[in-house]
Length: 178
Image 1 (cartoon, one colour):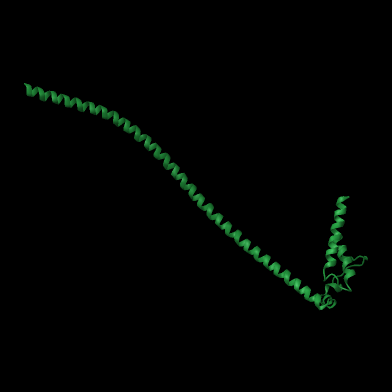
Image 2 (cartoon, helix red, strand yellow):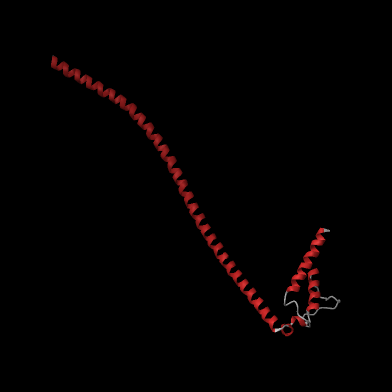
C-alpha cells in the first residue's frame, strides 16, 4: 500500500514539473502531448495511440520541427534555444571533465606500470643482496674457523720457538762456561 502511494506521489511530482516548464505550455498541442507523455510514463512505447489507432511517425505533426516551431512564440523559441545552449555547454564541460579524467587515469596507469617495473627491479636487487649477505656470512664463518686453526698452529709455533730459544740460550751458556 505504501509503495503504491509512493509511486502515485512520484508520478504527480513529475506531472507538476512538466507543467512548470514553459515549453510544455504550448497552446494547441499541450493536451495531446500530456496524454502521450502520460501514456509513455505508464509503460513502454507502442505503435498505437490512446484511441487504438496505428501510430505513424511520418504523419505525426509533432515530429516535424518546422510545425513545432510555428506553434511556439518567439520568446518560447528563444528560451528553448537558451536551454539548448545551456545544456550543450553543460555537456561539453562534462565531456571535457571526462576527457581530463580519462587522461589522468591513463597517466596514473602509466605511473603504476613504471612503479611496478621499478619494484620488480628492486626486488631482484634485494634478492641478489640477500644472496651476497648469505655468502658473506658463510665466508666469515670459514674465516673464523681458519683463524682458530691458525691460532692453534700459532701456539704450537710459539712453543717450538720458545723451546728453540731456550735450547739455543742453554747451548750458548754452556759454550761460554766451558
